Length: 296
Image: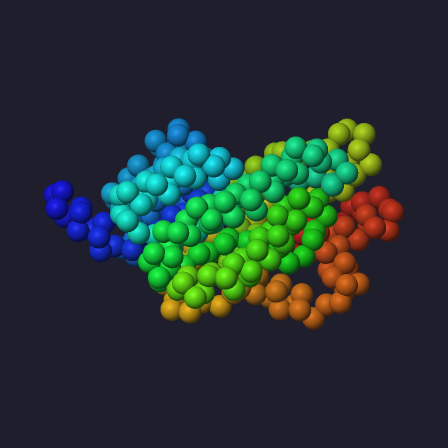
């Protein structure tokens, strides 16, 4: 049995996926395992690592990985290296959000969102690069968002983190290609994930905030119900391609949004942002009409 496991470690491709407690990360980890990969699934707390993926094969290996914790990053990369000696794919999926107007959002909350979504992804990537360069054939997938392409009200910090991630990823792609490392962005739209549910429970908005009507309107939006499984399948496809392009819109809705955004000037982009959030009345200085539905 030990010999079989050792052979498996030598022969199987190895991936590290962050943000695997639920949603896209957890699905991507399972999808890769079923495709024959050894997957190190990063979760934020030790308690999560003890309960997640209990029924999965020994090819799926949960580990504590808070991407804002440099010690956990070093330990995760060290474990991958000591157990397998290789890293063929890195999926930066960990992310957080908080619905708030920029003026209402605390500096600490702004920094926390940037720390996880942007600095955390870059820190994990920097730690993984030496091991990936040694492979001379590996891939990095950054899970971005349509919020990295257009700024929506109530999402300043989240959009900033994803816009920054998009730029850094393109730069990284132009730096590491000579080492056989391919880099790509996956840009999902709205999906039924735990982060979406948490977003509706957590806001920075005082009772007397001048932005409260806007935030209350956004909180009333129907939660995304789309199954995120196709996003996980797309991540696997991108990883296993020989030469992935830079950006992949995840799903038909995302493809349509990306194509539409390319046709818009600045004025039209602002109108589009109002329309998709149902906030035309907000910019007009009016009260919310009863018949306006957010994210219609």
